[in-house]
Length: 353
Ligand code: ACO
Image 1: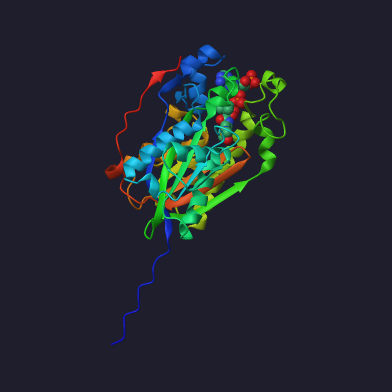
Image 2: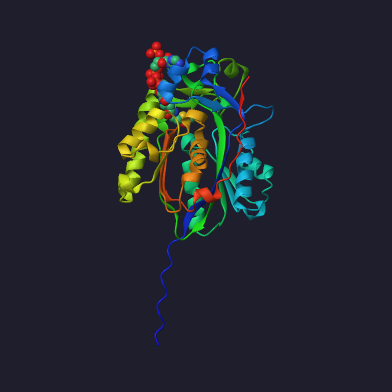
């Protein structure tokens, strides 16, 4: 009797098998900002959609504090021991130090020992970049459990006398567990950059080109410099371009995408992207009203917030744009029913003051 040929195995994909987030308890509202600079709740809501943002307070607390909170919660929720993690990647633009990396610090704080860990710097596209790298490590068979963190303490590089930037940003962290899966997971990734965009969005001092001096501090050069209108123009084009290219490459129509997960920089950019992709508001993740722009953390925080609504097999399109300029996107199928996994977390809330 001839042996029935074995069914070919489907490819190993990298799937997100858990997500957790952390936002610090202190909340900075538009009303409070209006007492600090010449702005108003109406201007901020109309131009950005942001109502409030969380700010990390406390001496000696950096981005790693929030990242470690998210990772500890993720490990607990997914029943993963620290010793099982093979690799940790942290996307951040606000590392605790120039070195060591924030990923190194998060590992130490979450009791994860002896594994490879490193930071990825791609501003607001950082999480998409880091998840793309994690996917390659899983697909190659090199690792089985990777933690990808997106975390930023934007309040550490924001000038709270500059109304054009201080209303936009907040602090937070999100972390996902990535594991091999033969049914669900990441199907396509796209990352891109254009360093010519630097002039529109950067931090002038503090790096090797302009190391910190008393003069750079006095001139307030350690804060985000953003030409809002120019960045807006590029962001609105690139976010939609990324989503549309991924849809074309994967023969997706607007009806076959269950969720658009856009970087949260401005509600108008999110809405314009959704419109070009053709998705109604109820299939677009939006958290900007309560967190503001948390840079590398926006996308994992969206996944955390919407986890209960996500079902196994849902098709997700992630799209991001940020400083660099950098941009990128990921097309994936979600690997589990979120309602069964989501843990109700009590989010603390107190006014900044
Ligand atoms: N309150 C009141 N007025 C303000 C404020 C404020 N907070 N901020 C700016 N204004 C004023 C400006 O001074 C300007 O006044 P003027 O006309 O008298 O000069 C006016 O409002 C209009 O300014 P614009 O910059 O044209 O306002 P715009 O409608 O473009 O909105 C915003 C500004 C919200 C910053 C927008 O440009 C934007 O969202 N840009 C993109 C941000 C982004 O996507 N960043 C990418 C990622 S960030 C990262 O990678 C780190």
